[in-house]
Every structure is written in structure tokens, then in C-alpha cells.
Image (cartoon, rainbow, N blue to C red):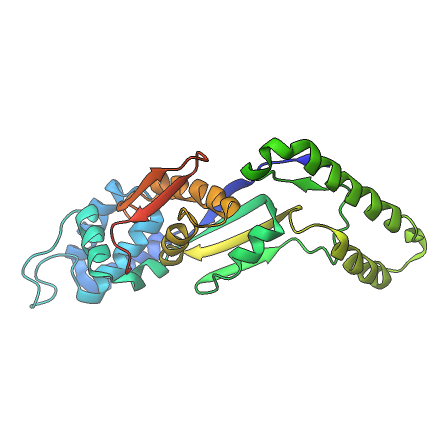
Length: 264
């Protein structure tokens, strides 16, 4: 067995087709809208934030004064615009841009918690019906730090018993369907704490919610550990969408992140 640490990778995010965007804005607001895009694109930190702002401004034609007779002034800066949207709780525009994460070396305890968040997400997890583990990887919770030797001994015994049972089958003589059924049965012996991999995609409205929920001090320690990493990534990559998030350092060295605006 091997002790491991959960890893977080941002492997994909929303990408804008700028040719189509420029053509669309010219149709919606002619030169006023295309000039707005030129200014905003140059200052933008990410395409996800730019896409979010476009979606919001198109609702009121607020790319500039004069496009909508009801609009006599606009918020010029993206920071002010998004801050105002967050403060009003107009969360729907944050559903247009998404991020895709790979969470590696997380436990099945973690994934059971993660899949409870269903709205605005897509999930693909390593299947132990098909994947027969060669060895157990395990993240050691802080509560077990002074019991590392005992935990290692327990897991190694489970691992030994697993492989002993596994080796009682003549795998070379089995067709794939039978291998799958036996692999599926064998996984029931493994502990929930064994490491696995999962790919998780979510829009920014959902990511904000999950960070808030899962980095709370009362959250399960591993999921807080992972979403603390997610929060730090999001603050760096999307500083406008997550501008209202502040953190408190906890005793276990993770951070509990809270937004100024909860109802988004």
C-alpha cells in the first residue's frame, strides 16, 4: 500500500469563439458593442469571465449607452459589473462558463460526498467494475496521523487478503465479461478510503456553492482539503467571479472560504 495526497488539476474551461462573438455583437449593438468588446477583451483575465459578462450585458443591451433607451449609464469596468451582479444574486449568468477538474488520489468517501452535488455538473469516475487495482493507495486523515503504523498494518492486511482471493481465479482463461463480474465482486472487499480518480465539470454558479459548502469548518476533512485547492485556483484564475470570497485558516492548515454574497 502507499500513502498519497489528493491532487487537483484544472484540465479544461470554457473557450470563446471570438469571430462569432464579434459578429453577434455587431448585430446586437453595432460599433458600440464591438468597441466594448475590444476594451473588455484586452483587460479580461479569462474567457470564462468575459463570457459571463457578455451573457449578462446582452440581457439589458448594456454594452453602452444608447442601445437601450431605458439605460442612461452603465458600469464600465468588468469588476464593478460582476460585483453588482453578485450583490443582486443574479446567478444565472454564472452558469454559462464551466471548468473541468481532475481529482486524483481522492477516496471513495470523497466521491460519495461530491456526487451529492447534482445541479450543473458532469461526472466521470474510475470504474472498479473494470479496473482491478494492483495496490491500495490511501490518504491519511489528520485524525490518524499518530496512528499511521496501525492504519498501514490494517490496509496491508486487507490488500493481502484481496490479492490472495484475486489470485485464486485463473484470469488468463476468463473472457472479459467474466473478468468484469469478478472484478466487480472483488471491489466490495476494498475500503472506502482507497484512492480513486474522478473528472468533475461544473459551471461557476455551482463551483461557488460547492466551495462555500465543502470548505466549511464542519465539512468532511478530505473534501475541504480538495475544495480549498479548488478555491485557491479559482481566485487566481477567475478573480472577478470569486472576488467576494475570503478565507479563514483552520487548525489543519486548510482554509474555510466564505463569500460575501451567498445567494448567487
